[in-house]
Length: 204
Image 1: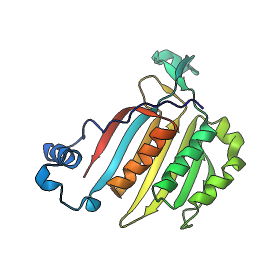
Image 2: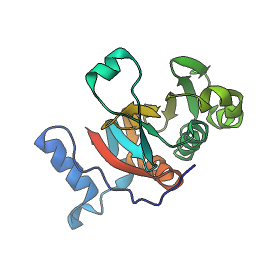
Image 3: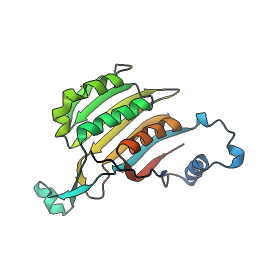
Image 4: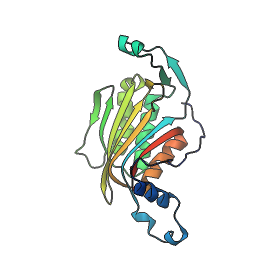
């Protein structure tokens, strides 16, 4: 897998009201008087973050009549879906997620254990059991559960093939997540794969 050392930039905007924008600015660039506030109680809520992996793309011929008729260009990302799945799971584990609720590839459910409380690390060890489906997969979906001070659900979609201009990585967090946990996960992906072209929606 290609690995690049691109720098991670903070999300440039928040899609929401002016107050939410100011809340985000205050959180990422706190005033001196605010720096003594207990940072551990800062949460991010209902995030939708979109990135591209920092890997080469190649344009491919669109398949299907409607795809060709639309005239939209299609690109394929040059990353290995199997390795990427393992990296995402390890990043979730590093960020204290415990439960892999579901893994889906191209609409086929490969793994579904929402009732288990602590199976994420176990899932990493058995991921090779799904190697054939993952290596040939075009769309990967992972759902993981975090039972922290508050609970949240992370839904991660990775698209190896997609229309030009769309992002290859879409991360949705339903509920509240501690800011440092979120950054632990994102920084792990940045280190192991590289991320670029981020788009952010959410609020504190």
